[in-house]
Length: 280
Image (cartoon, rainbow, N blue to C red; front, side, top):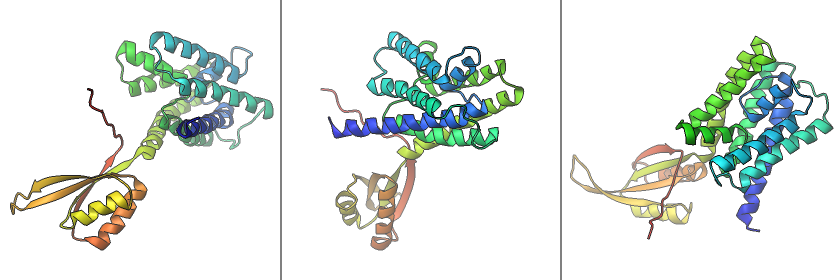
């Protein structure tokens, strides 16, 4: 099997375990329904004598089938794997740790811990183009048939689940669920963008040849050179453009301080990089 595939499925496995851990040890004991498929399963579990893990699995499989029918094969093997693995891990926790009570004995601390831990797990899943299923599938269906942006669709479906806690929990829990859902989305975005964050470094220097050599052969990144003319002096200059990660950026800045501390540089944060090959 391809090493890349093994690495991706290892990340999916770790991510799914982290998400299941956050749900079982922090969300379920606090009764706070932070918008997700597992949260809806927790609400349903108050009316049917079935473990939350089993309800989550049934919901996920049902939504996967609906997704395949309404959207097509957009849901690949990775999403199917993670969608089924997460409730299975939860079921193991239910067997090993029955009658689990809150670790922190404080619903607010439970919510904070859940948001942080689940953010790490979801970021790992999204980094390899997988998801935890559940509301992600609902959001994609809403996006296709109701023309609602994917982010807004996920937020709307999450809020509806959070509000559904009103049918079985008190007002304080409902408010905490809504607040937790809102901030949970922000934290997940932070983790996702933080993992993919790169920097676009623009350098104007008389030592451009040395700098390009360093970028290409020392930090093993790419670079593009543009010809430019200074508006004030009319002098021709070359601008180097490089996209680097955090480690490469640190090395490049250290090199620039030694090589040309007077160079003109601008730096931009880049969250998404894509390349569309030419069609022949």
